[in-house]
Image (cartoon, rainbow, N blue to C red; front, top):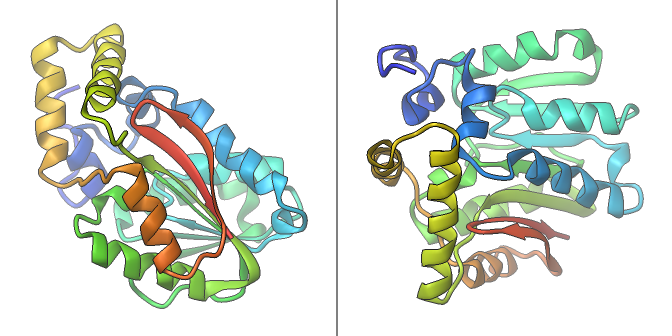
Length: 234
């Protein structure tokens, strides 16, 4: 995919060097175990009694890939889909046109006032764009404040192993996945270099600590593969 294909006004397209239409296929070439990770988010929501009744808030919804799975899995729930990227949010609107009665779309930031009273908030590959841990903790607190009592937050994102040797192995597996998907070794390193300009991956203990400091009383590791983890906070 050429670097010229993304539209200039889309952060997601610029970040992955793919156009919005190609995003769903492109993300799977770049991110290992992507579908398994999304299924783990759905499983975490299903595990908490009453959570799947909604409303469910999807933070950084992107093209709506996670939202589509949740909508299919939980047919009674209403949804709020939030993204700061207008171009990619338009793709989500198109993708989910058949279920518009259950979905409200919001263009905005994680740090803004969020739709209140949701039973669940979810995020997938979105919050690693927050590069400062204190700022991330404030966003976690903002998410907690938007949830109804007993609400659930499920976050699918990189959370690094603490030991350097395990981090190295995790990135090795990530590299091998991209090469198996047709990238050259130089292209993989170029991908990582681009992402480092806008991403920040914190060690898993720091993520757990930030969620606790934001006021979440119970945090579980629901799924983990390499650098990726699905965390559920009550």
